[in-house]
Image 1 (spheres, rainbow, N blue to C red):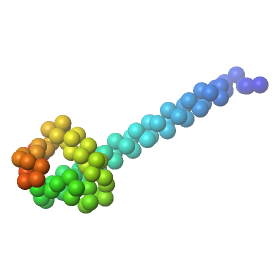
Image 2: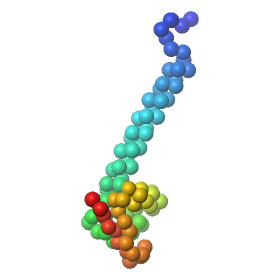
Image 3: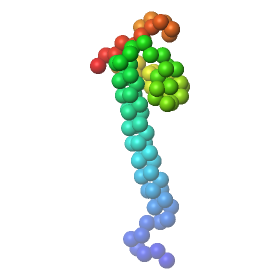
Length: 93
C-alpha cells in the first residue's frame, strides 16, 4: 500500500521525463548559440567563406551550417551580398 503522501508511480515518471526534457532543451539552445557564435567569428575573419569551407573548419555538416546561416539571416545578424560563388557576408553586430 502507498503511504498517504507518496505520489503515484506514473506521476514520478512524468516528473522525471519533464525534468530531463527541460535539461536537454537548455543544452540544445546553448550548443546552437555556440555554433552560431563560431560561425560569426569565422565570418569576421573572412567574409568570403563558403558553406563548405565553414563546415570543414567547424567539423560539422554542410546542412548544419546552412541552417545556422539561415537562423542568423532571419535574426538580421548577417546578410549575403552577391552570388554564392563570388559573394560575401555582411555582419551587422
